[in-house]
Image (tube, rainbow, N blue to C red):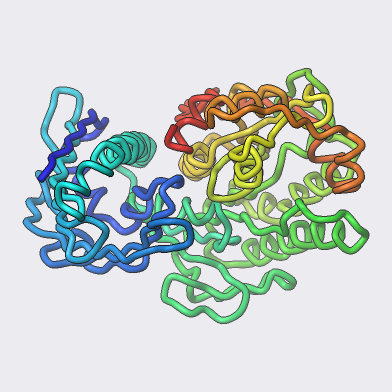
Length: 455
């Protein structure tokens, strides 16, 4: 048997750290995006005998089930999980929460045996140890930042938050983040609700299941068609109509309610500013004049019924969201891993980016910060040129980046969408977020990429 141990100081006391691990959503927050591990089912939290089932990658497309049983919970102190079935010959993971001067120390102690006995240790022992170090460094870092941001709501009653676009990448992380902190989340979905944590809404008319939204404190509106599609007349209409009309209908429905939510956080984009070259812009800058700028302006204006009804409205102008789970980075990874990456066009166009974790934290911050309303840039404080992004990604992956894509190829392959999204840029700075006390987990591009890719 081999023992692995990792520790990290947490910014909360031991009881709070234990309660977070016991909460709904915590396990989803502890699955590294680079690991390929998926949650299949979990019941009973970390109580005695509760079980969790994971799907774990083996080799290529092959996967296996990992079933763990929780044992010996000591509230505020420790618990452990033991493998019943999985990729290891044996596995026992003890989670300890040790009081310290600054809060508590999280200690993860894993005792494990690889399959194949001595041969397994010889062939895979070193790799297993390195992978555990990689995974637990990421897990403990995310635990610390999640707890730090959730602590902003300490002393307040938990919120009931309704989310549109609930099947998307952002909502897929926002939901477990909120539920791990004790908040209730209702997913607004097209069609009939299937579970108790869902409510039906019709984006065209804005009709919402009133009963399900009784007592709802906040709405996070993330729904909208993907802009990375051919910008034909029909494609542009879908992009615009999936944002502007449903937002206006939703806000009108909220305004008509007898008991309204206190806050609406509505997604928008830094596309609001149009192509601004290299100079920095903040939330006071005027809108641009291209297609995306027109969409974002209409999107934000559609929130007016909610504003007029006294609902605090935050229009979060979101930059390029970086995560291996989806979006731009997920599309870049395959060619870069094969050594086929490079800058796009001149490479001088600026990308205002934000990590998926920081976007989740910014959404939570907007829900809680009573003084925040109107446009807010959700971007990292260090925008990067396309050349910097591609060079940094190649460096993190230890790959060359010698195959640039010329501007003419972008136009030929992707048309107006490619020219607008890939060859133009804006340096949007998060002035209002920073002035309101927000702390970024990932302010630096290279450090962010290393964190999310486990490098």
